[in-house]
Length: 270
Image (cartoon, rainbow, N blue to C red; front, side, top):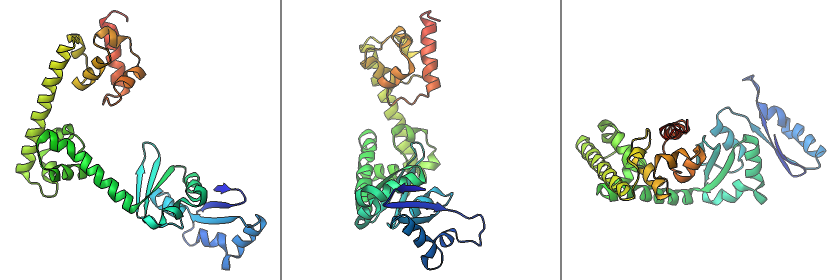
């Protein structure tokens, strides 16, 4: 249950008996049961909502009376984005944000509401922005980049790691196009790696740093830009400091710990 005392409550109900309608049982014939409770609470509004173990269904019911066009769930940060008709954004949010706040408390996840027209505009911008990487690095037309982004490819590395068959499965692509894209991706990464190594050499980065396990060239470049250019410099870092310097590092915490530990071993600290 989620409650704004004296104003409104949202109550989720469930019955293990398939022959019992939990919402109807709580409301009662002609709403008699719920009306008696409302009277006892001096007119406080009560929304009785069917509970569902399916999070998407549950949140759609919780945000009523607004209609939901799409549910986007981010399990990593326990956040839900609800796309509703543009005309119903205010209805979904409720007066002073009451409806969305109670729905969020009931579900136990953070909830954002966005209009369908706004979502379409945002999606178009994301496609265009994401496609820019492929357009600039692979010298392909924007439509090719947008198709790649729409199929979940977000970087040149993604394309390089993918199987030819997976790329060829993109709508409008074939095996020939897929092989050409993989070739361009591999050449692009090799070129960037060479440029990065030349940059590191010009910045007097220790060769020992380049030999440490797990570190990628782009990680070493970021470290060196922040004055971390030797094994001893890395040995003096803690895990959080490493991530502060290289926030987009693809290394796991265990891998970063291994890099730091190995550095400390090489300088004789452990």
